[in-house]
Image (cartoon, rainbow, N blue to C red):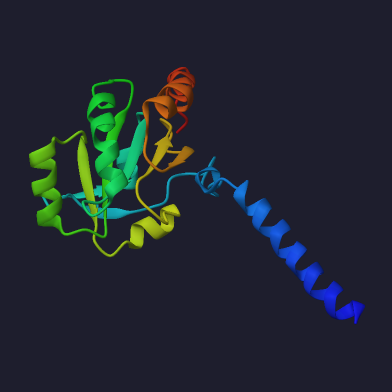
Length: 180
């Protein structure tokens, strides 16, 4: 009789412990295996000029922020004003990666709401994003002058994230030499 009471109680306690530990996890802090490695290779058409192709080589020679976004992404729309503001900073280049989106909707959205990006690559099938380890939008990657991924932000860039994380990292990267 005691075993019939003790076993369900132990199972219940185990489930509570697992759920309690899960509450402490921070999915936005998932480390990227790309950190410290060269940016993944890609060749994608540009949103506003699909006849032109952008490559991973275009990320070299300057500090790049690569922002993965889509018109269907609510958090991307919330982040957009911050991107418009930070795009005025000339210490980096802001590129967009339009993820699994309708190109016409994306063009209309940027024309209506402002375009913070120097260029926007189209990843209609989401295949390039797989190589980048993207599993949601928005995500932003910081790539150094040598084309090495240095940071991945999961979720929108807020003023707090910008000032506490991005600005110190950008200042550090400005002082680093470019490796071939």
